[in-house]
Image 1 (cartoon, rainbow, N blue to C red):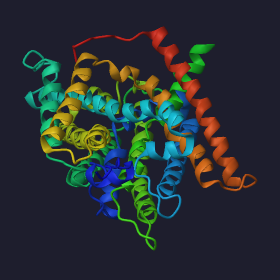
Image 2: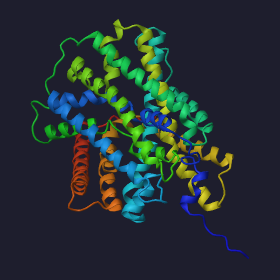
Image 3: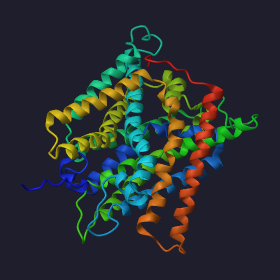
Image 4: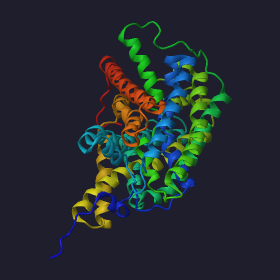
Length: 450
């Protein structure tokens, strides 16, 4: 009797959602990157400026942006470190660099949080936006308060739509239409927001005094570190870089890294053109009125909602809702891939459609329950973001040194080592600072009350 051999992980790529289709190109990659890269975190960039001021705020923004691009460049070139070897998932590169046990210890939580946690944030944000959109189109925030549905209903409405859409997208390349829509909506609503901000001018009694002035000790340093974290964590997408690159064809003469890096340069030119004006105009117009609890869009509605047409305000919120739906499909795909991998590896066969549907319904149902049960999850996001910061800014540097092995006397090796260590130290400091804020300021634990 012929012995049945276990399939190796790399041989399963044709059956898994992330790599089932490898016919991507530069344009499809740009849409994936931009759609997943411009998020709701960008609306909180002015919060960092309120604490750091103009000079240090701009320095931190430029540094974080450059650090983001550099670590993505490292990941792009780690996808195919040697001819014949291709890594299409962050976890695979981590295992090659750190070993299976250490890689799981370091990366399992960040991978799942950056997928599931982001989806939870999108559900909570979209639910709140749907409610606000209804009130705006109804005739006013105050007059329609009594007629509005409960917050949990708005979240469930978005969840139902997201579940149905996820069942129609078998692999990452099939998300392309939604990535195109997500890119257009993100660029338009961000541009519309900062353009309206400039048109309306600065708010009355705007103040640029730093929010930590008058404070001393741990409270002052915690505010500064939280401001740095707000800026650093506004840039995201590391958990999708290798996965998106996995949708590209690759050959000896045209490796996927060339196409991917070309797409990254185009994408981050677009992301920079959206994020920088949003941060600068938001702080210029509202100063320290933009707080960690209320992003730029909420502040604009409070200050200029009465003198802005319902069509303009409604358009901004509608575009953000559509963008949340599109981003949901991209960020959920790594989780779908991981669930289907366990089935395929165990059964040694392609995942049937009914099983795939069950897995996706289970995942979306689970995060939907969490988003409704813990609507205060955004308050914990800075703390969780601090825990995952090395995943974005440290591990790529260390993995490059361990896998590519550059000359230890060269600049690249020392740069990677320095950035890797600094990222870990910054992560520890951010976790301590955010935990301090949670303890001193508290969290409004409104369970099951979005």
